Image (cartoon, rainbow, N blue to C red; front, side, top):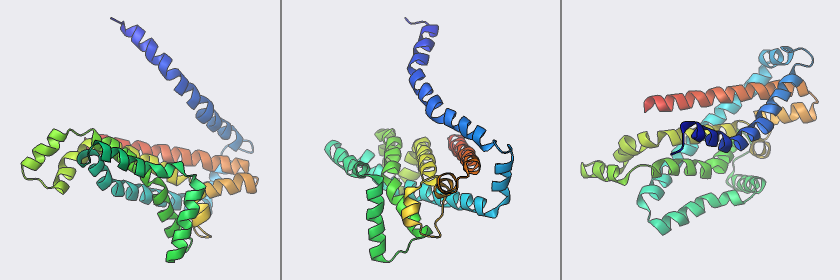
Length: 257
């Protein structure tokens, strides 16, 4: 049998590539941004972001539309994920999963332009509503995958037992499926929130003059406005806010369990 020290060594070896990748492409750039934001005074850019209403209003609006998007995506993902995981047969399940995941094959720019055309035809003007619809449209397949992963882990015997005791489908989902799938639902909520919070393509094409989000703000500060210090400060603040939001969601999800 393998000793615990050998198992720990193998585990560390397997985790090393992922750890090095995160260190090189996530933590190192964040450290660079932290240094860059303090070139003209460490607290200056952060105080400017906090004292100018324009910046924190953009951050608050982006967080609000991202939270609404994540909630809508996961709610819309409940029914199809339940059917695919617990009702559909083997071949039908594969076909349905392929249909729901296939939008990822198309480039995000083309998908956004297509939903923009549809919204224009039905009379939805560029703004926060169009941005919200576009973000839900972009992230729904991802939410379905997360919800499916959680629901598929629920034993069918538990579902059948609940039905035998007289519970309807809604009661089965509320009392049996949802609590057991909650970690995956929470993970899907967090991932969709983080993607929507800093999305640049969808707000740029659907937001018009009112749907100005964090992604657009950072782009204009760094690439258009030549304010690298301020753009770096906004990036770091948004990263910390996102990490705090993810921690709170996961903590609440596991506390419920």
